Amino acid sequence: MTVETLSSVPSIEIDSNVPRNWASLMFQLPTDRNEAGRACSLKSNFFCLQGYRTMGDRSAHEESDYESDYLSDLPTEELANEFSSTIDMWWTSINMFSDKDNEECCEDQTNKYLLYGLIYRNMSPTVYFSHLTNFWDTGKQLNYIGADYDANRCVNIITELGFGEPPLVVHAFQTLAHPFVFPALPGGVASFPVTNTNPSSALTYTWFKHNVICRGQPWICR
Image 1: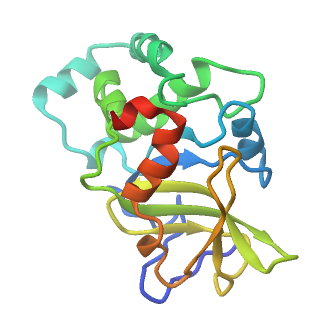
Image 2: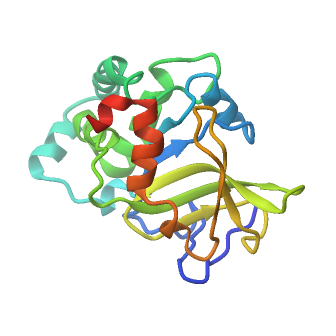
């Protein structure tokens, strides 16, 4: 795996030098490039919501006194059950499927809340769920790209995207000197090249929302 600095956009390796306040609403594309993409393609022709990914920790994240007191008074199992009950009513509506072929809801989804919501940010189930279902355009720039190198075409095929505040984090398995390609999606979205010097210009959240998210879940744009 290589992670390099794009000429006009900073690139940071995830789990290493990412700022503690970095967060991203992350989406898996239904492709055959990786296991998660193949699992996603069995459930949607457009996208699967991976979750709201954070890199913070409790000590670095400020919470209101009420929020902190509320969380400290509740055992983890109770918080997990609260989130599980909520996501059980919503997971099919937001395409938050399990990353595993043979699972639906809600163990995988709840584990993501416990890690990225509770452990990293001390979030209540309600707050984490509000981030999962925030599909508004405000405050969303491309800030994550996961890509798989295609040696036959000498391009990096995009498999995952995330949106939030900068910086842009890129995971690629070959040099970023090769261009990115947004893959053709089973639902009818055509493939197109993406500049590797400023991918945010081609992959805006507004474009992704109206051409991918809302075609997979039309209610989001109503």
